[in-house]
Length: 82
Image (cartoon, rainbow, N blue to C red; front, top):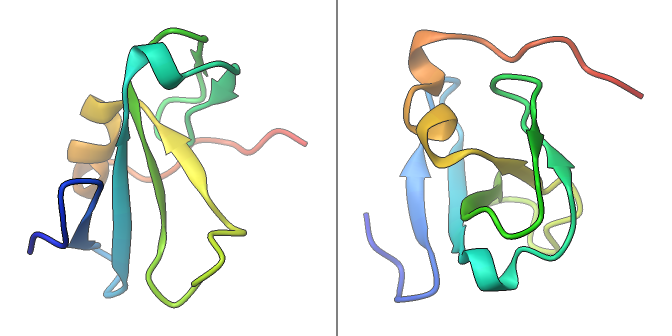
């Protein structure tokens, strides 16, 4: 279901709805760790920022490689680093 040009709402395999916002490479200024593959998303790499719709502040936002987010139903999150 499409919300607007900036992002969209997608149902997750866990039953929650997620806000999904594409991040253009030019706007990707930091390095993140993808929870889908546990690899780095380096600055300059397009990806998506995702959080549960109920989290109106986006405080539990995670950055995913776009293909990892698309395939999240086929695999669970990898280990979490602190």
